[in-house]
Image (tube, rainbow, N blue to C red; front, side, top):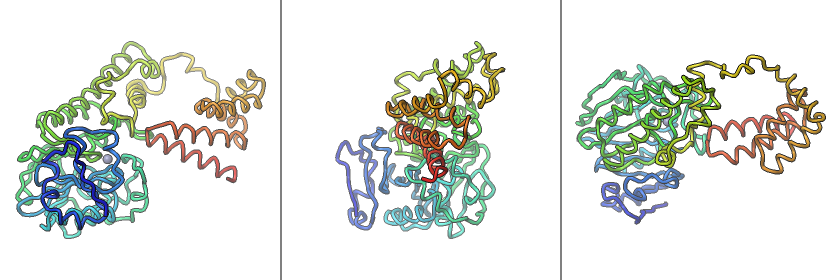
Length: 434
Ligand SMILES: [Zn+2]
């Protein structure tokens, strides 16, 4: 058993019944019970939760973290428990239910799914086993057909990859607009929302001022564009954040990462998230109107330090540059405005001319290997691409590109980008018999 209670700046609201009842902790096998390092803070270290943690806020609200940064929360009502999101698998959800059972033995009265990405809904069968109402945007819920590529990246994707196919579970209440509900003796409000997924909702618990934000506010730069995904509608995302701000929550519980504690801290975080999207959108659209191309915009648009330094705007899942290029493409399509882009050479011909200019393919290989030695991995990968355009089976070029991609993977902090690099490197190495 691992139990660690941080003594630094504990927030009395956080520990709640867990501190008051030490016997409970004895039963929390493999569960770490912790407070936040400081009220309202959201540090880089605090986001890494390798062990299941249960944080108690607002007396009767408990948030479990520790499965790839996806949260599962519980509100204790007079007549039962309301569960918000169910992690990625039944196994993970059952672990959290076991921990929650040490806090309350009341029956589960309802499940609320903020959205249907598998890392939030995969454990539903474990939680909804007793035919309790399920609230979501959809008429029915299943996770077997969901594509896990659109989920917030995990430290380990084992949970989602190993999830067994699941039967459809009817959602009793497809949510549209604002939807007040009374469940378990609790007055709650479900609000249809846009964010990382345009079919999500956020939950408002007015009696305690707790806002569950789903993936409309989370601990990453907002994924206006995640790789190989459709571009999200940034204006709708802004409207969702504006509606959340109007509630003036005292607690902001994201579906990823630690809760934010305190009204001022919650409002500041929501406003900074909103302002980031607004700034990005305004500056990108202004620049496009002035005739700037996508790479001009990427070079020109920067977040001010007070926004760029916020841990919940870290580019762990999506990048500012991707959002800018996506907004450009959404507005202007593939043409970057440079007339030369209308007269490009086919890749093989371009690579043949570059090799000729350089003094032959061997010079490209030599320079690529030198770039690898110097840690100049992007250039090494591009030189390998020229060689592979000329000879797709070029074994040395495949090795060189694989090594370059592994180097790039080690340098990036953006997890989907790292996954793309490593997956391609693995395929290249397999293709050469490694
Ligand atoms: Zn998510």
